[in-house]
Amino acid sequence: MDPCCNSQPAAKGERRANIRWQNLQSGKTFQENAVKQLPVHIDRYHVVAKTDRALHHLEETVSRAREAAEDLRRQERLQKGECRSCFYLVGRIGGAVVTSRPCGLCGEEMLFANTCTDVLCPSCSKSHSLCRHCGADLELRPRRRNFAFVEDENA
Ligand SMILES: [Zn+2]
Ligand SMILES: [Zn+2]
Image (cartoon, rainbow, N blue to C red; front, side, top):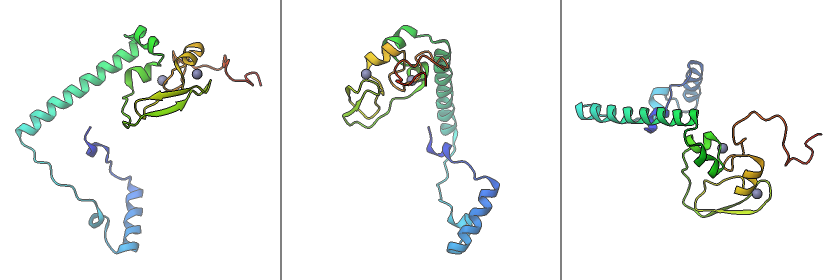
């Protein structure tokens, strides 16, 4: 995704407050202090390429959302012990550093090839029906009870 997509215009009140603050601090206007970006040269190649990319991104996103909504690879997902959100939607980008983390239930040390780690070991994930990556209910049922692993469950 283009980093420029993240920049949003400041809310009206916020903008006015910023102008005042900057005027007091540096005597410069909001516009003078703005980070300057270069213009994007728009020609037919740009439009064709961007349209192609946007369409591809849109189709991929919609198809991933459909897979997740309908749980189309359910067996594979359960095999992995992940909730639908983690399995279908969460990108796994982590720093390439060997990372260890103890399982959040049994404390067993787990080892990962990068910093995108799981919170539960496969065996605890399985026995408590929890997503091993994020710890949610494996079927995303809104659980209100049956937290067998919580000692003061009935307290
Ligand atoms: Zn465990
Ligand atoms: Zn999850």
